Structures are given as structure tokens and as C-alpha cells.
Image 1 (tube, rainbow, N blue to C red):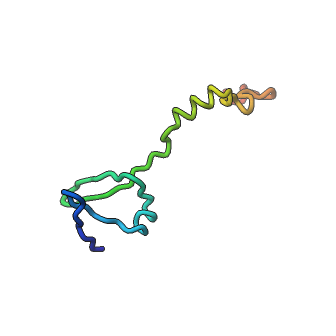
Image 2: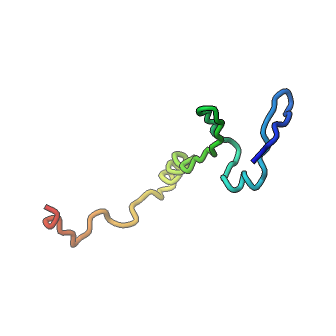
Image 3: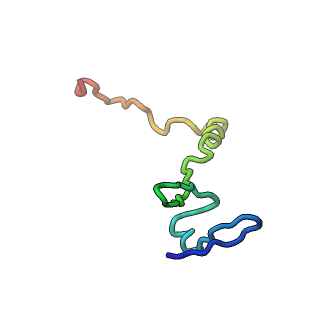
Length: 81
């Protein structure tokens, strides 16, 4: 695929089509990798972004309790020895 470099203010940039952005799940930022004469654009994916804040909120709201006991009444640990 061929793409044109375009002028953006005093700089230049590469315009990516909506189709490419959607296909590769590119949002606001990409990782730029320079490798052996190649430029690689890689989507930045942060699947755990804001987890710390959400866990704190869950704790503050008292929603971080076990849903079931971690030891069962009829558990026989002998069979694992």
C-alpha cells in the first residue's frame, strides 16, 4: 500500500484511513518502532488502564468481598498429599 506524507503545520505526517484505524484498533496513540530500515506502527493497547482506581472504588464501596468461601466444608485435603 502506498501512502502520501502530508503537511501538518510545520511538520509532516501520515494520514491513515478510517478502515485501517478500525481494523487495527488504533485510537489516539501508536508505538513507533524503528527496525532495520523499517518503520512499524503498533497500536498501544492498555487493557488494564484505570484498574487501580476502579479497585480502590470497589474497596471503598465494600464490593470487594469473596463471592464464595475459599475453603469448602467438605474439602478433603488428604487426597492432595
